[in-house]
Length: 423
Image (cartoon, rainbow, N blue to C red; front, side, top):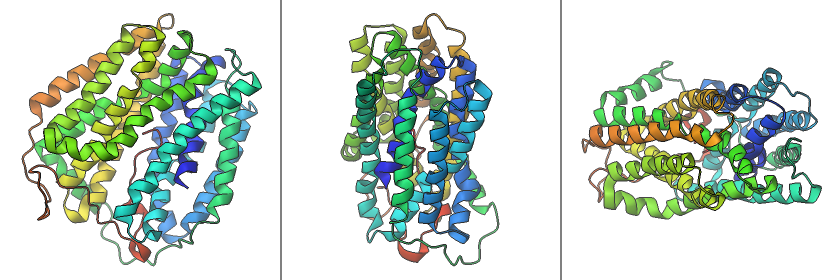
């Protein structure tokens, strides 16, 4: 399930910017189309989780969502729209339907695994594997079909995504039955969000969330601007998807390395490494180096995601009370994958429209932003040492990730927040 969820998006997302450019969509239009993922990601806390918890079995929601998604992707693959705003509408509908499934897929896993805290990491790892494998598969499909010339779109990637989406829709019906819960009386509406917002009063949390918002202004450049830049520097189009999978390798390694980093350099050092990785990556791109240097730097993107994004989730978990950890993660995702990515996608599209002739100059803006954020973070972030600790903690500002996730009939979908699909 996890492999298919992430492979559907991984089939077309790395080539979307190239596809839109071939269709004549300018930088501003591409920015708004990429922003539809962030808009759709807000659907999880706004209603999809409550729908699954009260009206519709989770596996049936997955089947319905990906059946509709397959139809939408097939229509895009058939060239149903080619101008910016119709494409914006198609992609917005697509993400409103499918973006919540990352959290709902997690809900299915948590409710049916015997030991979710121990087993979920290995389950989620297959999402990364699925993203990587489909990237290689799309490259092979495009090579075999002769779709290596520019100016003709990347329609093959959408056909692959549509087929995978249909496969996932059928497969979802074979998942363990996960019916709506008999929900107990609910706490007052908005109380969870208010409790999460109270964390903002802590200086270290406020500085981190401000920095996280800033970092998410720059990450859209990696999928919105970098793929066309790779092609303009000589990378054959079929290999763009495969090249970008190099960024997922450090994400896999992070599962083992992050605990060691937390012990060696604490939260402050680990999060700073992530910001620095993004800054160095954009600096190297702004210098317009040879193609092999650009490709060699792609793993830095994975280092940034692992140390800052995943490390940030652990940090937020360590600062939240035991009964508000899901709300803390929701706050983090709204700030980053929601508002941050939305504004960042529009910003990337606007800036790329300024530098049409030299795409390398586009990367100066995110480079300056990340360097400024690194200086701000190092100067202002001072962990106060107050965590929701356990008696077996051996690091003074780190509590091991322990979401106290419930299995069986008590794990609710609207309590679960996971990273957006492009993470």
